[in-house]
Amino acid sequence: MKINHIGLNIQSEEEIIDFYKNILGFHFEYQFEISQKLAADIFGEKKQVKVFLYKRENILLELFINSLKSNNIFSHICLETKNREDIVIKCKKNGYKVIKIERKDKADSLFIKDKSGNIFELKE
Image 1 (cartoon, rainbow, N blue to C red):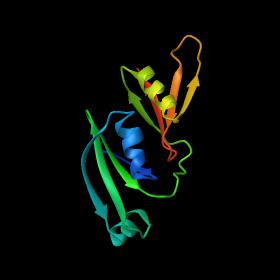
Image 2 (cartoon, one colour; image 1 turned 90 degrees about the horizontal axis):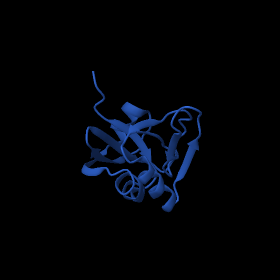
Image 3 (tube, helix red, strand yellow; image 1 turned 60 degrees about the vertical axis):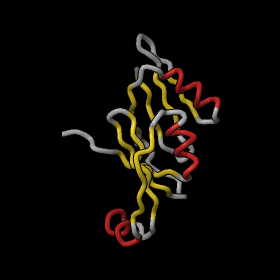
């Protein structure tokens, strides 16, 4: 078994370009809309919604445009990358939150947040 894609709530389309494309390096694949009925049947939310698919290597993200901020307190996605310090620099430069946890005898833990509240852990 493997993960096919990950669906995330994003508050604005600008966030997709600012964070997912420019900082994390994901690329646009395609977009579609989910009808009110389908959204209600699947997610319990009767609301038509735009969805953008972005991809980087083997990771596919479904980014749902929703004005409500996500409330998944412990939910996060861990990304393994060779350039996590470059990503941290881009985040700080563009006003995204960076959380660095120093640890003894291990590499520091790094987490970044988009403006919709989604959390990403960065590992090398």
